[in-house]
Length: 309
Image (cartoon, rainbow, N blue to C red):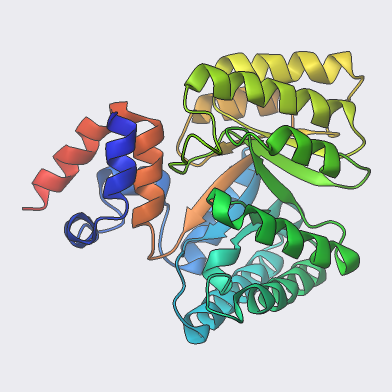
């Protein structure tokens, strides 16, 4: 119930107006978002990489309403990739892109514009010596996102995909994408989805995650295991052993600010670990989804709110 309330708050303009007056450096916000500017994202990436971790960076922004806003997001990614390249970090840092942030939802031209914009980012990433992963959003955009992925992979086969285990369709999508060279991030899913398309019980979501993970580990692609769940981490390691995968033929992914000690432990044990690092001014929706996943952080968050009054 609390998770659903927090996801509803993520779309509340009144709550957003209060929360976004908080400086990004304060309390719970800084825990999950290291900054608003490219230089802060690059600096945070450097610290993680020096600790033996890899990074995927997300310039936060969703629900783009016009072409100008989409263009500004593309330019931000180009600037980020340039910054990573000049800092010598590109080999260990890729970028994650939400198609909604680069125009996917615009009437009539949306899917075409988002594909063109994603192609520009993919080209810049390749020139910098790194890759792009297309983030997945709510179920209504799944087909459109996979269609864009298909187009991009014609010229940029290294482009990564994301699949969400809580959707009924995902096991079949895993089978379709578990081919050689295909990078697939498997996560549980962070959006509020209706029961006709998604599992509602967390145990059912976990069971779906394991079924999907078996498909990916048994396949010819490159699985990216996105979870903080200790049990699923152990299962992923066991499946990697079962299917004869060596470290480096798959990776674990975790969010910036969550289970940092576990990230370092896995990396020290020889596993490849990538940290999902978001930055930018549009951090509110991202923050609320993180709180929905970990409601125990709500007390800390509310204290931060009170301190701003």
